[in-house]
Image (cartoon, rainbow, N blue to C red; front, side, top):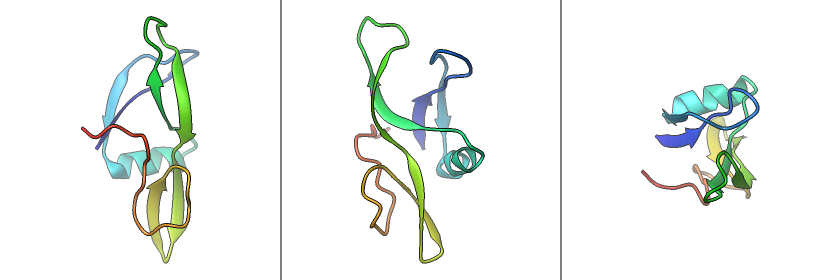
Length: 81
């Protein structure tokens, strides 16, 4: 599972928790997800580090940020909950 903030409009607002399957489905439907952190005292302002992408290898899908030559999910910088 992962936690994140969504941007239904011009700013980020609601928190949401997604399981792996829901995150993959959302990315495949065209939604974008990023690893980053909130800027203190700046409302809905974030420092964005990396985009979350789906990489397919040997018929399997992996969620990754950065390096794409892998054989497992790798979301560098994402908090563990």
